[in-house]
Image 1: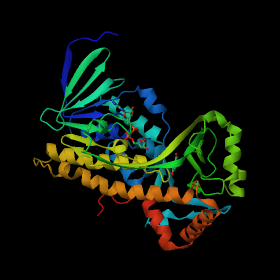
Image 2 (image 1 turned 180 degrees about the horizontal axis):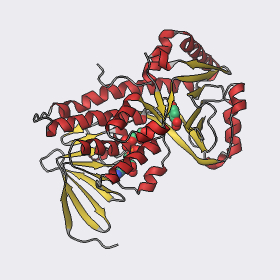
Image 3 (image 1 turned 45 degrees about the vertical axis):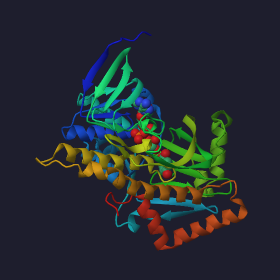
Image 4 (image 1 turned 90 degrees about the vertical axis):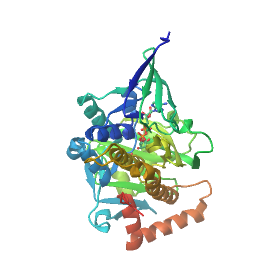
Length: 406
Ligand code: APR
Ligand code: PHB
């Protein structure tokens, strides 16, 4: 391919890198506030929609979708959950999340669907998303002329902007462009993965996610709709998808659940099957001059508890409010929001990191769990389901901590 020597110059107020849920939601909230933004994405729309991720939304995330005018899908198709189920020692126990939190719930609605709704709103509004951008790089975010450079269809483009929003996920270019020493990274990698299967069969537990602890390892029963199920089993991280026939998967899942639920599972051919590693990760701070990180670019949680998408949404809530304040609302402008973004976002992130790490530690078999460790987990689970105080701690974290927290 030959590239034009000339660089095409364009300008926007906020350059957003990444068209995952974080970038799209930020773009939509800024658009609604009259702030100009362009999204630069290295993949194609189909690739972005093909990634299967978690699907439990906290109420604050659902509220944000409505605020962004993309709530019709979740209202029509989302399935409200009032409780969760824990399986251990071969028995299932319900936790009344709704009752324990004064009426809060979560909603089962897939990240793919959230992304699809946001993409549709963006294209209906005629907003620019540059897909399949190559060699994306970020410049001068600690100076006075922040810019994003990329190539599109053989043309070099320079996008000048006031701010860069790094919504480009864990492997993105934004965090990687920050000078070493300016960022501190905290990481824990877990010694196992999750094998996930998507199948067009009715979910075994449509009104509550089932989290299973067994001597054979963790299992999870979830859904995308009343006709589409999502199930997981803990597996060695170096297992290959090819090692897991559909039959082997269903057999293993059944062995990890209580007999009644195992009996009720409706099996069918998988339409997606993948193995994901589990990681906890936080980068601090989340602001570097005019560059802000949001979502997976700044933090990763293991999927137990489904906090990843919800944390991305709360980052975007803080960041969009900060930028709206900066550009002025009702004739008043303020830099207070952008100056406190990192601190406010991280306060919520660390609490969700703690919850995800705790639930992961409680529900999985680790190489050193052994028979004693298994009994310790079961004793803690027994305590959890029988103590209102302990159940409340689980419930209030599961529905999501308040956005303004101390
Ligand atoms: N240039 C442009 N785009 C990039 C680059 C780059 N150099 N690197 C990555 N991207 C894009 C990816 O292709 C992806 O579409 O950034 C997007 C990041 O999207 P996500 O990884 O989905 O991250 P985020 O939007 O923060 O969403 C967080 O996704 O990973 C889950 O559990 C997580 O549910 C949470 C949510
Ligand atoms: C999912 O539906 O993919 C899911 C649900 C709950 C979790 C994790 C994943 O805790």
